[in-house]
Length: 313
Image 1: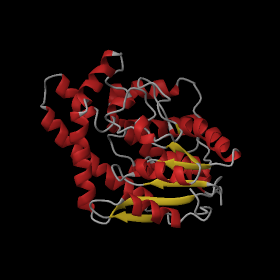
Image 2: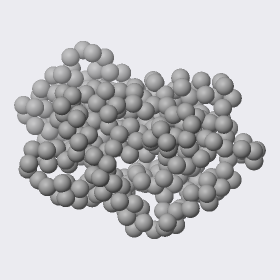
Image 3: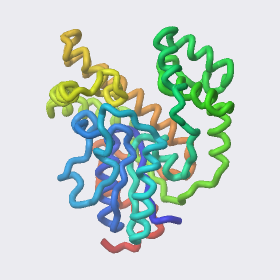
C-alpha cells in the first residue's frame, strides 16, 4: 500500500478539515482534487481552503489555472501526478481530497486519455453545434457511439462534442477507449475514505448554510470581478454551480434570493451525483457523521483505517 490517503464525498461534507487533520498526523501534504478550486480568483463560490484553514499544511493544485481557460481531467493528471510522486519520494504522505470523482479516479488509476490533437476538428464540431443545435449533435453521436449518447444529457455539450471528436480523430468510440483503460491495474494503492452524513437532511442543511455564507462573504462581488477581468460568461469556470445562477442577477434579470435557491437545489442534486459516483468504489471506507459533526471523532475513525499510521503526531 502506498502512503496515500484519498478523502472523497459530497460537497459540504467536511473533506477540507479532515484532510488537514490527517496531514498533520501523517506528515502529509494535501493535493486538492476539485475541478473548480484550480481556478485563480474563484475563492468564495468554490469554498476554497483559506490560509488559516491550511494550518501550515502545504496544499497543491489550488489556483493553478486562469478562469478564462478550459481545464480537463487529463491536464489535472499531467500536473498532479508529478506532485504526488514527489511527495512520496520525500517519504511523506499524500492526502488527496476532493469531490471531483473523475479527477480522483484518473490520478489514482494513472489513466490514459484519448488523444486530443489540434487538427481543427474540435472547432468544426463547435461551429456545427452552434449552427444546428445539440439535438443534432447528440443524434450524430448516437449513430457512432450509442452507449455514450444514452449516458449523456442533451445539456452536456462539452462531453458530447468530446465523444464525437475522439471518434473522428481515432475511428474508435470514447466508450471503447474508456473500457480499455479501465482494465489496466491502478498505478497507486491508497487508503480510501468517504465522508458523508448518516442523515441526508443534515448534509442538505449544511449545503444551504454554505450558500448563504457565500453570499455574505461577497460571492456577487467575486463574480463581477471575474467578468471585469475579461472572463467570458461562457467560460467553463463560470458554468459551475454557484456562479452561472448569479449571472442573471448582475444583469438585473433575477433577485439574489431566487439565484441562491437555485444554487441550493443544484448543489443538492450535485451531492447526489457525487455519492452515486463514489459508491461504485467498494474500497471506500465510509464515515457517516452525525449532526452536528464531531471533527475529532471523525479524524480518529479515519486514522484507525490507515495501516501506516504509527500513533505518533
